[in-house]
Image (cartoon, rainbow, N blue to C red; front, side):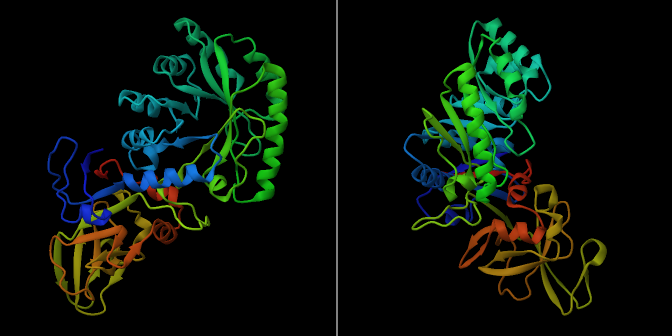
Length: 404
């Protein structure tokens, strides 16, 4: 993934208008299409989340899936400067990428060993990554690899309280705790669960009851645990449940909220700010007569003489094929419809109603231009998907340009 950095006191969009995109080595990018990542908005969202939890709550920022498409290294560096307590990744490889980039903050590998045994546990121990324990089967290799280094390593235990995905079931907890007691080089630093429906209070309450019952059993068996964590973005911003009564340290695990999205969350004064934008330029203009079929399959036919703009972004960049004949873009401060099918590398935009469009004009596919805005929720709704998939689907071939 190519990246550039721009520093400017002006508004976020102004930072990128007319900006010559370059990669991390300073090479000009000859395809004028890129994703903008506003690190000031990221910092704002982090601070807003921090203000909504108790002072003793630590924030474990979820930076898995390349920080939801925003660039895990750059995002983690920015959050490390804000004092984030831990970073959450899904895989060993994601954790190693951050360590190789010089990230020092504790990194929790949510997926654990993923059935890979000693090769994975050895890498985790060497890189000082903290594994999540989802079953007793991983304990032996982790303990052996920790023993080989002469260290006692921290681990986090996950309880499946109703997600039916990763984590040990409460009825299997006794067996796992017995195994942990036989692993002198493992230290259970934290215990966690995952809310399946954080926006449904009674479902979350049932999960919380199971979690608290498991907590009692865990501490009776292996002693007091330092860190407990439950709350994801929705739980944090809706205020339920976050705290673990009596715990010495509580973490919260915001993900999507850090990147500016949390549908249904209201704030008295401030709101989350979108972190990512998608931008391109018009690279070719043409006039076509009425009756012209546009793009593959001719799914759009012009009803009048029309003016079209070709924009170099497509589904290979993460702009969904499902947006064909549905989405709009912003050009010269106005909305213009995407017509015909989204192709691998390009889209066609009908600019007949937009005066004065010229080759090189900025095209906003996600973000703000003038008084108009295209939101993440708009794209997800039109594509029939969720906002997570839009963000995570932005391709590695898309340069990320970071505003500091």
